[in-house]
Image (cartoon, rainbow, N blue to C red; front, side):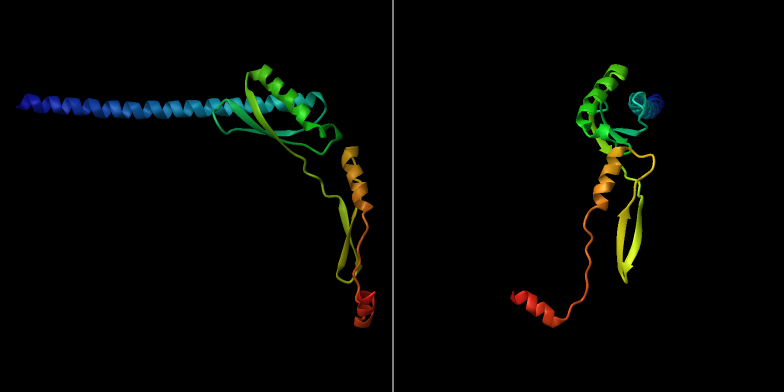
Length: 172
């Protein structure tokens, strides 16, 4: 009987060792895939930043993988510019550039154009504030065109009138 006990001990030790080995291999594989994914995202972001830098535009790019580690989603942030009006065409060229450079598939591109606040607030009457847009220095003409239109919008003013005047106007 002592031989059987020794065999059970040997086999259980082998089982524990195999289990530990499987866990270590799984953990190593997970770390490898995570590092590989991070490198892939960094390469794609760098390729997109270089693509825009060639045209003289500074952008911030962040990439994620949402489905199967080969389809990327990019988030591009830039100042509002007239040349990005047709961003869907730029998106196609960007997809081709990333595919040619690294062999990665850029699935979606989301654009963000934060607007710098360059408006000053003035008080025209007690409790009434008016926002006046002024031209942003160093900005693209596209954003300044929008600010000009914003500045020319009619401003509304509310005042109190006597009740008799209100009834007179509503009867007409």
